Structure formats: structure tokens, C-alpha cells
Image (cartoon, rainbow, N blue to C red):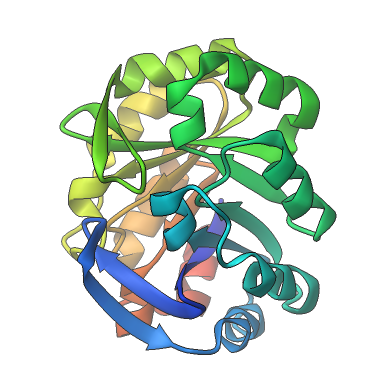
Amino acid sequence: MTIFPAIDLYKGSVVRLTRGDYSKMTVYSTDPLAVARGFREAGAVAAHVVDLEGARDGEPLNFDVIRRIAEESGLEIQVGGGIRNMGIIERYLSAGVRRVILGTAAASDPGFISELAGRFGDAAAVSVDIKDGRVAIKGWTDLSEHDALDFCHTAVDLGVRTLICTDISKDGMLGGTNMELYRAMRKELPVNLIASGGITSLGEVRALSALGMDGAILGRALYTGDLDLKECIRSSH
């Protein structure tokens, strides 16, 4: 299982939100590239980068910062936030990003999912952000009409190879992740699955690995010191 330390960007700084709430933001660093390099030194091979302004506003406002991370950190970068058309996808992939992640655009247009999967294969993923069993969109500020598991099945049927699944109620709370959600998804969905939201213990890292999850995104718990990245990487194998 690949461990993805998270770098959430807002106005060029590394921040964390609580339950996706932009009014509950903590700034951890003003040097994202240094944070990424620190993750690499700890043994990470990949990182999960989110443009929070992009997620909310629909434009890749932290593109230049993300390009530098992709070019200079030594990590494979997957990026989400504000990626809502083919032009932005191509810009990121040309800048050295390993994988782009679609959220709002995928939930709003199944036809876009099909085109995405056909053109980019494993270089594209769909993020399924879940709140009260439904798919959240626009930086988690709105709820769509899609049932989360039904939407996952639709994405898989359309050719998506990687799903990133987040229980928003757990994100940034340091209260543990939603193991039942991932158990159900792993049972039903024959694709790469990456867990995100509320992972706070080595026991959870080991349990997700034992479930057969392909990746786990670690956020606030790394920044607060509740989790040690080196230990998480060792526990993920």
C-alpha cells in the first residue's frame, strides 16, 4: 500500500481544514517544496497535493507551486482541486504531475469521466468525497444528488482505474477513519482504492493495508505529530 502524505495548498501555504471547512484552517508551512522534500527524506515515494482554492473556485490557482513540487521534490505527485477540463489536465501532466484527480467535474458529467478514462488511463483518478452517504462537490461546499457507492460503480463502469475515497466527517478530526466504508468499497469495487480522511494510528494504516487498499492519504496527523511518516511507511507493507 502506498502512503501519500498530503499537502493542501491555500495561497501558496501548506494548510489543513477541519471537515473541509475553509473557516477552520490551520497554516503549517509557507514553504510547500520544503515540506515535500521532508516527506521524501522520510521515505515517501509519492504525495497527494490539493489546490484548495482551485477546489472551491474551479481554477488552478496554485499551479506554479505544484509544478515546482512535481519537478523538484523527487516525489510522484497526484493533484486534485479545480481540475474541471481537459486543458488543465494536460497542463498538469506536462508539468510532471503523475496523476490528476477529478472531483466536481466527474460528479457533474459522467461523459467527462468516460473521456477522461479513455484518454489518460491510470494518469487520471476520480475523487469520491462522501458526506451523509452522498457525493460532495465544489470543495465540499455542496452535496450532489449522487449516492456515493452508486457513483463509484458508475465511475468503474466508465473505465476509471483509481478512486480516492474520503469521508468528510472524519477529515481533519483526528478521530479515526471510516474502516467500514473502505471494507465495503474494497469488497465491491475492482479498482485501485485510496483511503483518505481521519487516519490517525499505525493500527489503522496496518488495517487498511490488510484490507487490500492500494493507498492511504495521511494529513493532519502527520503535521501534529500523531503519526510518524517513516513508521507509517514501514507499517504499510
